[in-house]
Image (tube, one colour):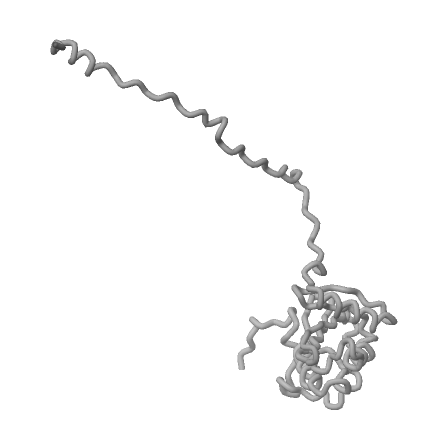
Length: 205
């Protein structure tokens, strides 16, 4: 017969805690971190041509070959190939981009002018319908000689685009059939598309 005191002593004794599992042997080692870039070092800019798809690279290569006599430069924006040329070659380059079957730039989607303070940039967005794809032609125009050949003889759509660029930025298009104002009136002074235009200076009448 077990005495009551013995039962009380055994009840007060703490239960044995099981030995902890050896986590070091079973845990996954922490991944090694890449070494941090050197202090102050800047990563080189990404090459925009790397974003081009296979068809985009094919179109860019064909465009560079078509315009090779004009020493073109290659560029890209996302998956849209771009070619940069000197402004004096704009008319001939646009005609080639429309006529060559490898480019087939039958449609002028847009002709935009951008003011970079020291020069303007004209951007011709061309569209091929068969197959359907887009390519961009760019050229820079200095402030001191804001004149470039008109391409209205290549695409009729260039007519209004060039008149708009003349109204807003003062770019002259040699050979344009009707350079009359499109958005403004004849007596308007200045070019409101330029960054230097004083939008916040009002005159009281």
